[in-house]
Image (cartoon, rainbow over all chains, first blue to last red; front, top):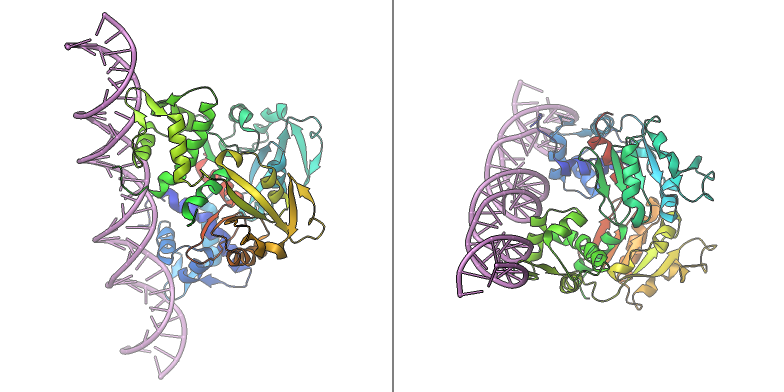
Length: 207
Length: 207
DNA sequence: TATATTTTGTGAATGTGAACACAAGCACAA
DNA sequence: TTGTGCTTGTGTTCACATTCACAAAATATA
């Protein structure tokens, strides 16, 4: 099984495992069993073992997985072994929350730039990041920033994406509640927080 | 096919369709073809048709789907045909962003209450919602609020969830970056915005 | 009425991931 | 060295979701 392609669903779960491993290593552990990790992150043990089996042998039978070795490998697969810079476009309420959000750090993610249209916001500093004018988006190319977060109103999301693609951005995390079209080589992940809430009533009994 | 159970993945896509339908109906259309809707929301047309086929005949061959009828049916399935109230716990940066977020409205969602531990925040008003003390969470039961959004620090996410469950909450949207354990009957959807960003580098070529 | 055109609805094929059970392997103790 | 207990690794089975292709149905046109 060692040389098979890693399924997308497994990739999606890797950050969950990584988070869990980092938090448990804080507690002084050196290794952890699939069962223990499962309890902690809320995924079945056999699912965890299968996922890990896609990229080599990390466990020791009878003992568990070496936390240090495993986290390093997961980081390498996700390309998080080097600091990954990202730019934020749109410093409204949601944008500000993202800028101040702790928790990007543990994945080696660094929000390294922020942009907004509002001239009043440009120049202001949030968390050591100086907000720049959106007209300066093209500078991302020479700054070698390949990832961006879109947190602008729906109406301007597509044009923002266009500008980002033109600036050489390869991956976009889109918080605007709409589909945005990009060239095939660019990866977009869209999150609509209202949409996720909208699914809840379906699953909750009694009206 | 009319009486088959609706797959989970279809349910997850229904809000996307609903969003698309509502925005296109603003443009004065009465009906829309699966092809047109597909272009708009970024899902394949045959996927759309299959999804709709799980719950009855809404399209007219040669014409398309009646937007009005279809949206109503989707809302009914998702139980969004009545206003669904939700409570927010944790009015920090992210919590405030959620409170002021437009876009819950179109799904008939109403953030009807907000709670925080910080006494300085309690009593303040944001978007017509007066922030209450978390010790008042138990009042959710008699207020018949069955959904909640958790936007508190990771360390207190589990105890917050416990309090919510005790208060009769049946569905939780969790923004804290951790797994929270709840009774089986309670549905939890966890969103970790850092995690989604962490997946991007894997898909973007060149480091 | 007949014919062309459009678009839905769906059975079947294909692909993908989850669940399971158990053999293989390691550690530790006697 | 042998046995016991624990945990991984994986082949297999099963369930679900996506994709495809085409018949059926409605409309428009002549």
